[in-house]
Length: 194
Image 1 (cartoon, rainbow, N blue to C red):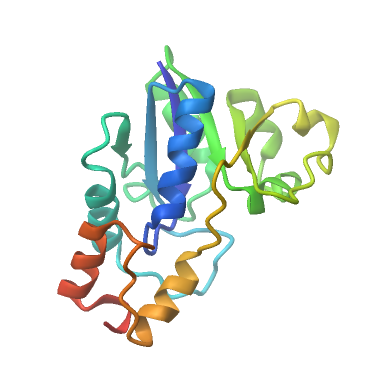
Image 2: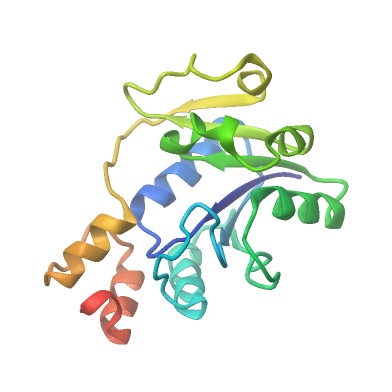
């Protein structure tokens, strides 16, 4: 199978995440997309992150009706920082007959040269990079660029989990930014100051 790996804090998961996953699935012909909530993202040290059980449940609610989307808690079951290389290494070892693609949002693609053990990651997976309008797809070093499959977003949704958390804390509903089951879960659990 061709499997997309989509890691993130998902605090909370929102429509932008789902659009990226859907576009990657359709453009590259993925059989499945695995959403992998991070336990301890190394690029967000010291940040308050919503407890894993809430983030896992929000992802589950967001993807439950999509036939190709799956939830994986592989990073939550492993101690220490959630380095992508460790996750990719583990998944490739556990599923040696599958081909993995790492789905990366446009804002993170140009940072790939700075990722921990990026050379090892590139030996195991190809990267699906989402190019928003204005993304410089020529900015990467050649050894990384040759492993990136660029996917143009048909719809640019300029939304972030940080923005959503701030809006919810100010009393906004989150409607149309969050899948409805996720929005109801957040309200019911009084997350993000709701």
